[in-house]
Image: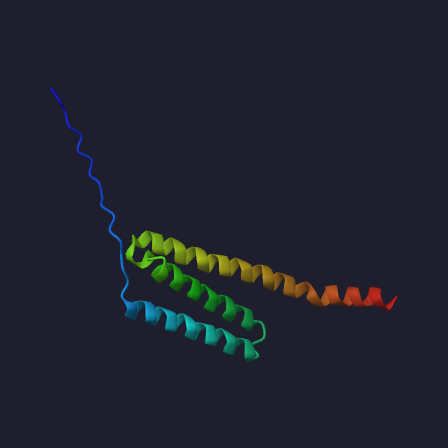
Length: 116
């Protein structure tokens, strides 16, 4: 008596993006780069960092979704990528805000030491 194990295999198929999608993605990334430069020129105070990290997170998500073809993969993989990018930007922002809060104290101590 023979038993046959039929394992279901999934066939990987390459996904080719059309030139229009690639061009639109590139134009979007260039537009976001221009937006980053424009945001750097405007005085936003502490929000400048939030704007820069937000734009960078969107750009990284677009690169991952379109150029790495995660948009056409399982939705969970796209969700993990986008969420991790935004969490990384969020945590980096907290660290930078924390260090910026102590900068006046550090500068005052350095100036006092140099005055001696």
